[in-house]
Image (tube, rainbow, N blue to C red; front, side):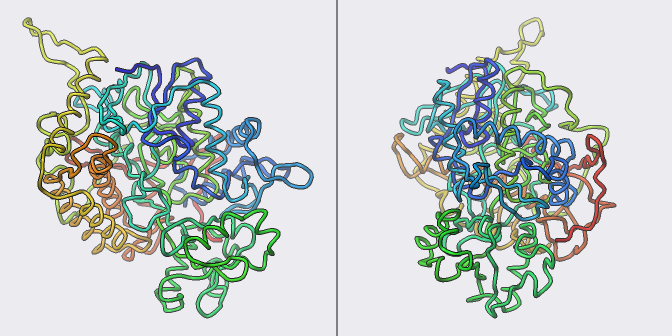
Length: 632
């Protein structure tokens, strides 16, 4: 068994920053990641980092823009923490050597981005995430922080208690992708989940194939609520053939969207009469699909993004990577012709419920980055706010897990006196196939914990009736044994259904029914499809018999996480009967603040998902953010 003070699961921007912060506080920290750190999906981020660095700008203005962009579903303490800490974190990156683009006077460059009232997006060409990732990884190497790369974390080692808020996380279980060996990792202080988003729930996504919702699904089954999962961002400019992202930086530099008629539709059709192409992403995505649906799309699928007028020198200097992407994947030369683009799944605003320090309702378990939901983005994330989220909340989670007192938090996790129990009419029963137990393929009856990796906190009884509480190493070892049983079962089967078939069925249903435009009928059909996939997953098997680099085994385990995540997204979308931010419902065409100014939460509840709500926090440090009509 490996032992460290702090274990960070995932080594993208949030994970690397958390590990550095924990190390700086004196903790023995290690990263456990299914990819080498520089292969993490953070490297695909192109746009930039929002930070109030210039005269004429302020964190308060950044906070207002972020709250407005969230459609007033962001929690003010989280929003203000992001905007206050982002300048310092951005400057720290520059001191660590991140090669930001610069003005002629030597200052770091900043450009306009969608939904911003000031050009505060700091960038490094069109490869900001790539440079961020390498800058942070250099600091990890410099500090000698241990990295277990290509170790896939499959289970949390959590104590059992009827009340999830009384559970404790003592470590993780992972298997070595190279050898297939399963091992336990004990965390003396805390586990930080930084596993990224769930984009592979959809078949047209900007996300890497590794983004399978592992962290949220593991935390959910362990007892941590998922928050605001219905809010999925569809980026307006992705390449039609692959889903590869075309940066918002193109529009930030002055790129223009045209329909088949050559109309600059964002203005001419009144979607965003002031901001045009630089309206928030949800507004632009809906506009593009409306153009296509009304017959003004190109080949009934996409619109054109034109940057030719910017000139070759400016494009090559600031957007060179975009030229390569358009050429490589669509055969288009962006210097001489417009690029085809359409909306694609890009980001999840929801995730693991946390406070401002990344702490969940389970003691010793943290989350940061896209897998978490401190609710800084609410119903819609502004472009340029994802990377500061990684570094700001990654750093805070690392420090807190290492034992540093960061002061009292204003966001409460778990159930409070303001909790409201919810109901949703579903066509099928969600959750486990069998009440309180799953198939062995999920880590079920033989494991005795519904696939969560939990171990009973009483550990049994002595002869005198007194309970025996297992020590943390024993809790981790029991989770290892459970995981070995699950993997052995998957490997021993030689017939059934394979994960690839189930994954395709799930992705196509989610893309068809839980996309930009949502209907009650479509959402209910998605739930039926998810249920069918869940039932078929009970008969899943791994075709590859080897233990070495067995991607079939890894993807089969990932498939369980995709099922749980997809169901949570769809349940939240069906429950929320309003139009807010990225969540559009055909039956409900208004934002309904009187009823829905609240967060959606979903608890696994040992296989019987329970819906509940908690109010949004709009009271900030010095002001209350009053909901207003959101227009651009």
